[in-house]
Image 1 (tube, helix red, strand yellow):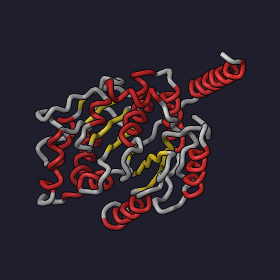
Image 2 (tube, helix red, strand yellow):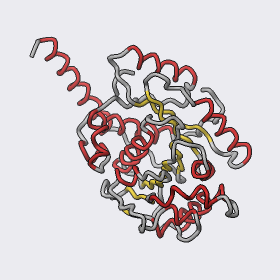
Image 3 (cartoon, helix red, strand yellow):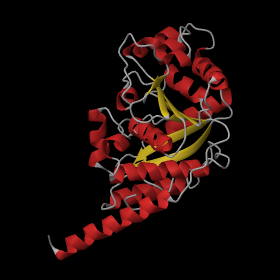
Image 4 (cartoon, helix red, strand yellow):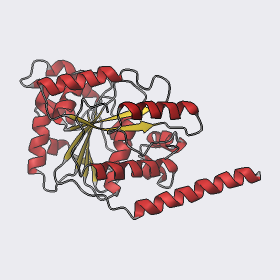
Length: 305
C-alpha cells in the first residue's frame, strides 16, 4: 500500500475512534412525551425506509423505547426489523379498518429489545379504496395510536411511521397521526425534486387536518465527501432549511445497502461500520434537539459522517 493510502486509512481510523468515543460520552435525553414522527419524501430512492428503521434502531440502542409503524404496502420496514408480515398476520391494515387495535398488531423485533413494530402486509395495497367509505378516514391511525399510547404498559419515547412515497389516504393518515415530519434527502442530482410539492401537501394537512404538524428534521443521505456534487447539494439544502437539517449526514455505504437483503438494520448487520456510526450520530442529534420545540413546518429554513 502506498504511503499516501496508509496515511488516509490511518486518518479515517482515528476519526472513527474519535467519533465513537464522543458518542459513548454523550447521554441522549429521553423526551417527556412520545415523539410521533412521519418519515416522508414523495421522491423514491432517497433512503426513506432505510432511514426509518436505522434511526429507530439507533435510538433503541441509545436507551429509548421505540415503535415503528410500517404504513407502506411493500413492507420493507417490517422485513428489515425481522417481523413476520404474511397476509394472515394482524397488521396495520386491520388497525386502519377498525378490526384490531395497535396492541393486537404489535410485534417485538429481532433487532433490539427496545424496538417494536406494527407490520404492514400486502392487504394494505387495497386499503386506499376501502378507507374511502369509512368515517373519519384521514384520522384512523391517529385515533388508534392515541389510544395505544394512553394505555401502553410501558411508555414509548419515539414512534416512527414509514409511509409510501405517493400521497394518498395512507400518507394522509401518517401526517395526521404525527407531530413531526422527517424528510430524508439524498445528496445526488434532482435531490430537491418534488420537495416543494411535499411542503405544499404538508401545509394543506396543517391547514385542514393537523395544525400541530411540523417539519422538525431533514437528514442528508447517500453523501459522498469525495464529490463536489454532494457538497453542493448539502450546501443548497442547508441554505434553504438551516434550522431543520441535521449536522450528521449519512454516507453512501455498502453496509447500509447490504443490510436490507439480510432482513436487518445496519446496526444488526455490521454495528462497527461507518454507516451504523452515522445513524447513531444522527439519532443522538435528534434526541438532543428534541429537548426544544420543533421548528415550524413552513420555516425555510460535512464530509462523510
